[in-house]
Length: 201
Image 1: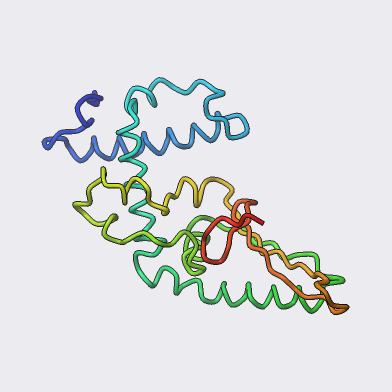
Image 2 (image 1 turned 90 degrees about the vertical axis):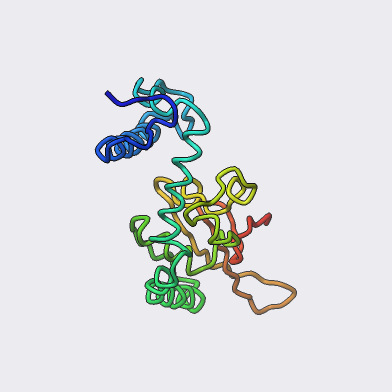
């Protein structure tokens, strides 16, 4: 039986137990998505195993941090290669935006669908949600530090289920008879600046 007390695993814990806990954590995260009502996780009752093994905010915070650290190094800003592999996609996005500008009367949209393994690198390439020091994702980081607790790189917010990026092309008349084109970037339907800050407009 898995021990659900005192950090859930001591130094003598077998590797199989650690792997089982990881799988339980993934299962519970999926259950939150499936059982929630329009994003309201409190609207449903979850299996007992979730509250049994992950029953404190401290435990959940540590596991979320581990998820974020893994994504930071494998798909995010941790290695330059992660963003470099999105260069072709970034160039194609630029070309699509330009096409929308030139053909505003007939252009309706280009839609692409992908997983987090594609979205997180392009989000990194665009330098969205930047600002964290890589030190907070290195071994030995103080999980109670303000830098860790207030980190911007949170995959639960950056890349939840059904994450999307939208590049809107707008043509507006601004004190001129000639329309000017503007680009609005949205992350999960919320405007965001190219610098990664929420856009109040």
